[in-house]
Figure 1 (cartoon, rainbow, N blue to C red):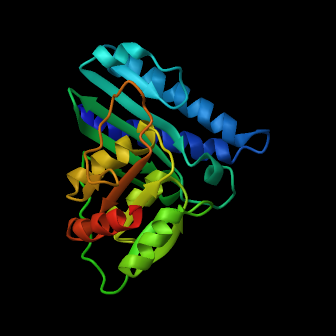
Figure 2 (cartoon, rainbow, N blue to C red):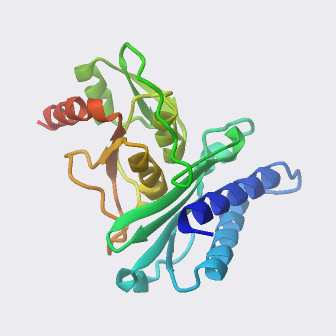
Length: 244
């Protein structure tokens, strides 16, 4: 199985396990159990399928030997733990990405409760843009003031969605036009979504337009923009004006 198919397969299978766990009535803390069980599954499967590769996971102690590795899997076993723990919510995800020698080369974002896996194994086709206001995905609990001001500048409409993976997926699926985040994330929050979004032809960058870099000594990667390529200049210019 090549890396693209492996990412797709692991994200999908981890998602299936999370769905099953979510339905068990005797689980006292489904959020903690989901984080733990999904991490353990992905770690074991990667150790078996790609034993020579390093792994950076939200749910594991950071093994700094990854910094000397040529290949690093960057995973978020359960992106959107809050949403996962709320019955009926579908805006949570599983992230599996591969970084090789400076670049993201494969990735998958499973949306288990939506019955979808978006991946570089079968790159999604982004639907044509709708006419009207720019739809910008933001957190449903803490929309950054920066993004609120940006929406005012570009005549945008804020759309509340849960996890980071679900937000980027919404851009790829044509449900929104952009995802702009400021306020703190880590590499595992965006690596897999960015890998798939790039393959699909979307723009991805930091808020200032600089590249998103992965497998860094400090995995903090606090901001990003994912959008339709034709909107990148408008949004980045608006962000620069907000900063001033």
